Image (tube, rainbow, N blue to C red):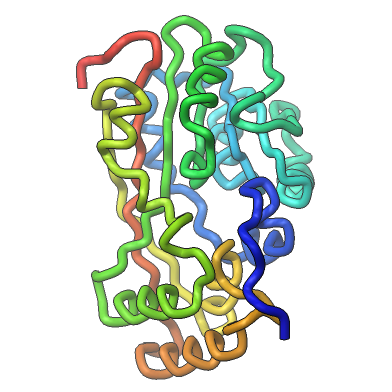
Length: 263
């Protein structure tokens, strides 16, 4: 059995987890679109750069809205999965690039979105890059599915399992990005909205959901077998009719980089 791996580059962390990511990570509630339309001026003609687009879970919402979307994703395996899933859309363009160097033209997009990705970015560098590629008056929308950790006994115990076995969970968890960090990025407090959502899993789905996380030890790494042993015990203790639930608040921050808005 190998030891816990050295710290991975953010652009490589999900390379071996793509299948589980596609199958078991949550999508995003369609209420996001309504919010962006009413509060941030999104229309079907808005051009969107979905930065850190991964397998396309957020991109899909905008394509369904009729938007032209550039999916900017540096991880080859994640990007290729997104290309396979979204290949039927003529409005989708896959871009092999990073948040800090998107390769998109100056002033080319109306919206920049980042779903479950902003916490991986170099915030100073990507802010300058976002300002470069946005059209005047363009918007940035940062989105997370924020898994609730204390809404039920199962969720409390699942969080304890992560803290016990996950290799660098406390360092890379997106919960490090709070209102203060986002305010510093925008240089004012942007509009914030949250939407409830949930997932239900049988045991195999729960295992896949855990293994989709970049911090969970994989087969052959220290703690993997023990983690799955304890996960199965947790499932058996807390399942109801063979299922457990993950509960989320899908959080959206939306603002402009060139001027404050009236929140």
